[in-house]
Image (cartoon, rainbow, N blue to C red):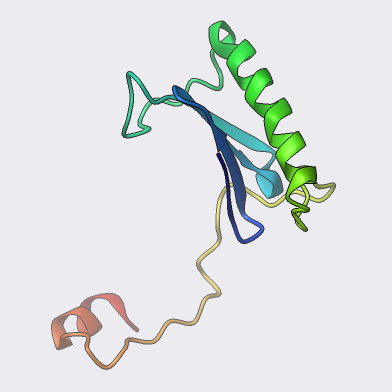
Length: 106
């Protein structure tokens, strides 16, 4: 199974394993869905499981071409993993209670 979300991430899975790739961060996550169905324990940094990541990455690359995915799996210019919220202008929606507006909005 190959899944996508905008240009932000791609994932591929089999019966047991799931690999998620974040191209703009050059980051991957690997999960053993049998022992970790909630995807809480990222195994991508553990060399013990690198063969599973390699196998799924190869499958992801095949699916990427097969499904004519317009967004690349690898990019030259990477985004920061830390998002800067300081220059985002936020405004409450009309359903926000007053205490939320007073507490969280300028």
